[in-house]
Length: 329
Image (tube, rainbow, N blue to C red):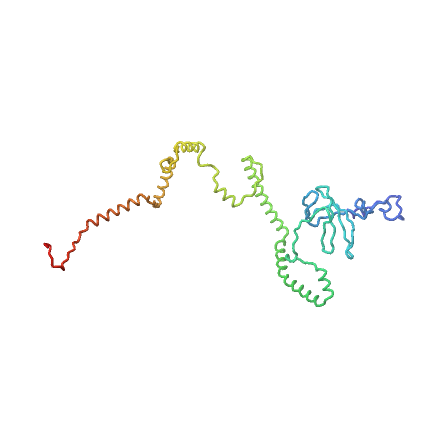
């Protein structure tokens, strides 16, 4: 647009070339409204957010790449590089924030009105190119041996990176050699995923309408399916059956507590009988401990039997045949 306007200037009949350019003759600036504060050293530019920030006014997130009309001002110099500061208004509230350039670290610094979202990392871990620090640059300029060693390291790093770069080049050429085919494949995948998402949305809407709910449903997972298969959504007995069972339990329950099993309800008896029958069918034999009275009775009975056996045994007569006396004596 700027070039078109520059090539189609209209010179009125009263224009005097001795005054200078057409803008000077009309008393306007070439940037029009963008230069309305140029007498203050401020020019309006289109500024793009260099990284993600949080606005201090509305506490909202502003993503990298969002563009603003910013007031550009020169605030200083870093050696021969000017330092510029940009002031802009948040598009979500009335807060203003200022960002300035940092030529020393090749970065932008937030001055006021916002804070940076910290998601930075060490570039050496990502195999990125890291600019040399001031100390290293000074050492390269002053020390020839260090410069030679540094150059040898750079050459070795370049040789090591050649296979990786070759693989990346082959992969890129294999995927994007045919632009039409790659675009068709991507569009087909997009259509399939869009159709699947649409079917899932219709299924969720039907489920919400059936349950009379107005909530957002999450995607199903394998653990949810297992849990749903293990849960019983309907009771095995109806309400009338449960009430009838409760009444029968109350009627058959004894009024006074008892330690013996005389006061057991019919349902409990039926349950115990069924358990015993199942144990017998499985071949399980349960050994019950004998009571102390039975143990004493069995012990006394054993003693009586031993006494009877001893009485039934023949008794032996002992005689002294060594003496000269006889029985008549």
